[in-house]
Every structure is written in structure tokens, then in C-alpha cells.
Image 1 (cartoon, rainbow, N blue to C red):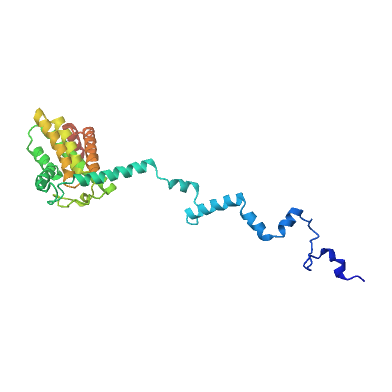
Image 2 (cartoon, rainbow, N blue to C red):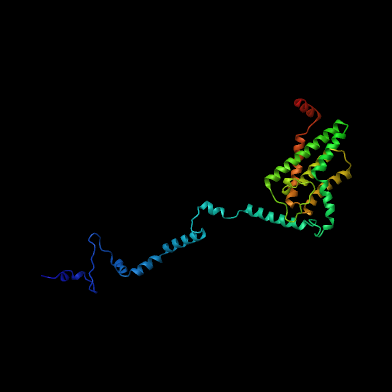
Length: 278
């Protein structure tokens, strides 16, 4: 009787070990049989394939760039800075640099520290309290109806200016320059904010108001314009505001006068309002 080794001798390898082939599968091609004889080389060839290299490289780059998490495309697009953002950041940097360079009267030790008392006098000339007191006094002392009408609307314009500037300052909340000294005359809670310059808005609005409703000679008209410009420029010299605060303040005050003209109170309108209140 033949031994089992003799019956399966063709299936035995050269090393004396037996190899069993599955009956449910067809035998692989000779090329794969040759590759299967060396499993380590097959794994290396699979790892070095171009598709494998491209896939592993892209996954490694995306994982390393996002800290192990893959971001969606819209989040990746937001990481790129926009041109508008770069322009605004550059404008802000120039504004801060120029404001610091022009703050030559910020303290007594500055390059123009000796001129600081004169700048503070100009600051008081553009303050809201002297203008409110002066407009109320002129309204009280005026004898003509036309003069009372002008002074009443000037008083209304000054109150409107205080309200609008306080609202914008409370919304924006921009701090004053770092080199500013808080020794201003009669400040309020919103005065710790810088944008916009209330002195600049008041100077621009009052200058337009006086030139439109008062009969002034040519030298006086030039003097009013120079006063408004000097009030705004003194805010930067004293270190109270940045350049953009004053520039926007001039623009805001110029536009406020248009609002005052639209809300102009005539004697007839005032009498009707008083009659309705009674």
C-alpha cells in the first residue's frame, strides 16, 4: 500500500514541507506566483506605486496643515487675506504712525511743548459748553425775530451735534492715542473714546452755519474758516485724536449742517409747536 507521502509527493516542496492549494479558487498566474514567493518585495512595490505616493503625499500635507483635521473648502478660502483687509490694515498703520509723529504738543517735554498752552486755548474755543452758553445768551439778548430764529437753530444744531457724536463714539469705541494726556476741559464718559473728533464736527458745522446765516466781511469769513481748520489740526498736535478721527469729524460736521437746514425751526413752526404743547 503506497504511503501518503508518496501519493502527495508532487505537492511537496524542496524543503520537505507540504503546500495545500484551495479547491475553491483557481491557481494564480505564474507571474503572481513568482511575486508571491517574496511577500516583502510585493509590499515594497505596492508602496512605491505612483498612485500610492500621490495619495499619501496629499493626505500628509492636508493633515499637517490643518493640525490633524481636514477643513472644508470654504474655510480654507477664508484663510487667504483679502485685498480690502490688507488696505484697511495699511491705512490704520499709516494713521497711527502719522498721528504719533504730528503729536508734537502732547506734553511739555515734546518738541513743541512750549506751544501747548496756546493749543489748549484753541481747544476751549471749540468746546461744546462755551458754544451752548454763548448761543443761549445771544438768544436771550436778541431783540429781533430773525436773530432769535438764527440763535434758536444754532442752539438746536449744537445739541444735535452732541447727541450724534456721543452715539458714534459709543458705537465705535476707539481708544484715544497712547501719547494723549487726559487733561481736557469738562470731559464726559464718552470722551474717553476718540472717533470721531467732536471738536472737528462742531467746528465744521458752526463754520458753515455762521457763513450761511451771518453777514460777515471777507476777512471775517476767512478767519472763520481758518479757525475751524486750526481747531481740527490742534486735536492732532495735542495728541487727543488720530488723523482719521479729525478727517471724519470734518466730514460729519459738514453733513450735520445739511440736517440742521432740513430741520430748520421758523417762528411759525415754533409757535405751532408751543401751541400744541399747551
